[in-house]
Image (cartoon, rainbow, N blue to C red; front, top):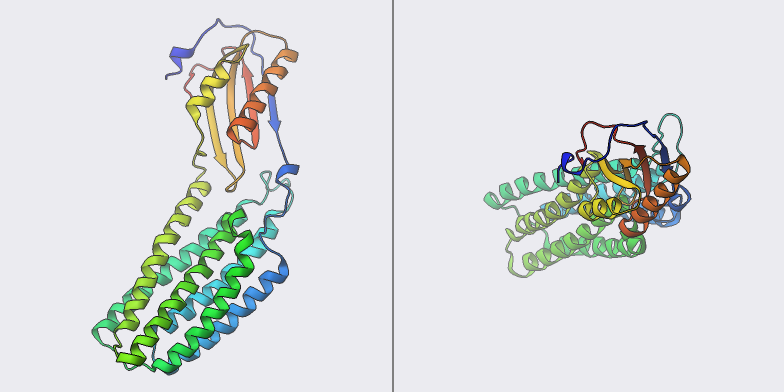
Length: 318
């Protein structure tokens, strides 16, 4: 559909209006994702197990334990960062940041996932080196430390599970914890194999498998955060939006649509609306209908519209 196909009417006085539909209160809820107490205990658990796994990995010679220690260390930083950036995101809008601070959470999710992705690639490289030159590993110590790590990971996951699906930021940290719990299971299984059969190459193999799994999951989160940071269009049914608005009384066409997200749940929509030559009081009624339509049927959070009477030379939709 081109703008010229939808252009109608004759030149007349331009009627310009601008209206912003805020819904500020609807989005003022605390999205930090979890209580400070839960964050504190998750952080403490991961910090303690990180130290234990570093010591265990060095003493036992297990690369898998050291990789799990790295994951736990990143978990500690990720969870704490998620909490603090979640608090930052709740700051009110000001003259410096008129859109607010919501993208602090998205930046946090991007950094957390990117670090985990880089660490996973490094561990894969190290695992291949170990496969070529296997080292002696203390299976008993490896099993003991892996059991302690798994218990801490399970407790951490349970502490954050109820809130993990409410925030992309906290979900990236939750993914850290899930991946670490899975890696602890792998380390434990590898320790058992090494203890019973002395197959030391299982250790780097477990490390590589865990790292590939984590890479797959983190790439998905990174892609979503990049889309938001690059102001990619929200996933809306634009054909249905255009048809619905242009079918409204007094509307000639809609053009110059811009749509983006400040975080994973806040969608901004702005557009020019060509209208018939009607009084300003009637324009406001059209605005209200469009806003209700966008909010109730398409989940848009903030709407900004500009009324026109055949002003723009181009009537392209985007």
